[in-house]
Length: 150
Image (spheres, rainbow, N blue to C red):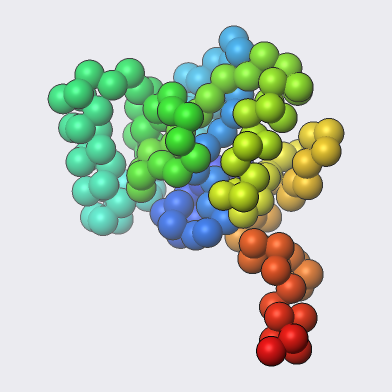
C-alpha cells in the first residue's frame, strides 16, 4: 500500500515519485499488480486514463512485453524514468547486484525508497517519498547554505 502511494501520488510527476522498481528474480509481478488494484480509482481521472490508454496502445503496437492492471502498466526497462500510468521494473539477483545496478544512476535519483537498509545507500521509508524532512535537500544541496554563500 505504501509503495502504491509513492507510485501514484501526483500521477508519478513528483520529483520523488517512484518511477522504477527493482524486484528479486522470480518475484511474482502479477501479485504485485493485484496489490495496486487499490489505486484503480485513478482511472476515473480523464488525464490519467488518457495516458494509460495511449501508453497501452503504444506498447501493444510495438509488441512491447508488459503487464497490465486496471491502474498501471508495468514494463521491464533499464531507464529510471517512466511515463504517466507506467512503471518500469528490473530484476536483480542479490543485494550486490542491486547495488551495482543503482550506483551508476545515483546522480539522477532523488531518493531510494525501501523498508529495509541497503548496504551503502541512503533510503527513505516507503510511503514517505513525497514528504521530505526539513534536512532532505533537492540533489543533496543545502539551500540555506547555498543562499548564505552568495
